[in-house]
Length: 239
Image (cartoon, rainbow, N blue to C red; front, top):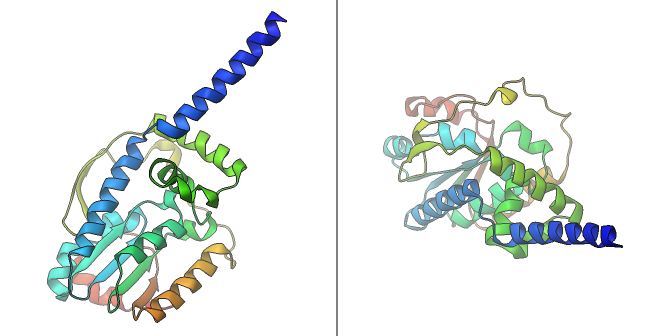
């Protein structure tokens, strides 16, 4: 009997620890990303004229010097790059918050985003911390998986040092060496229509209704110099 009571106590303590973590633990990684997104939103909101918004994961964040692009194009440009771990749905939602009629959206999604969940591991952690009403997007099985996955990722997290330009571009980055377990060739599933492509079609219709120019392009694979921007324009495709 005492053994059974002990087991029940351990189980209840485990559930209690999970509950406390779920409701109160603040991931430093997500706090940094939230602060970054808030600053980018404030910058976009402060632009009165028509602007260009470049959205995507970290390949956008690190590759598009939007201060330089703004200067050379003569159009205010916002770098809305964040992290592939959010999922395409989250990235698109954030872009829509920054757009108004007359703006231009350039969406550069990493290939992996087309085969990942629409709202992925970091989106779960973000909603857990800042917008719990959005957790309905995940099944209970997904919530359990993402809770454990984020717990492990939070333990491994190493904070980088960087400067963020006014328009949202990361520069002077230190501590971003790729871990050994990630130094492997990328592999992608065969492309097919799914929730991500359906969301892109919905975004196309949204932009048409709000008079927003929408371009879907290849993910950037290297640092894009502002003087090469005219060449890059040829890779834009109206979706």
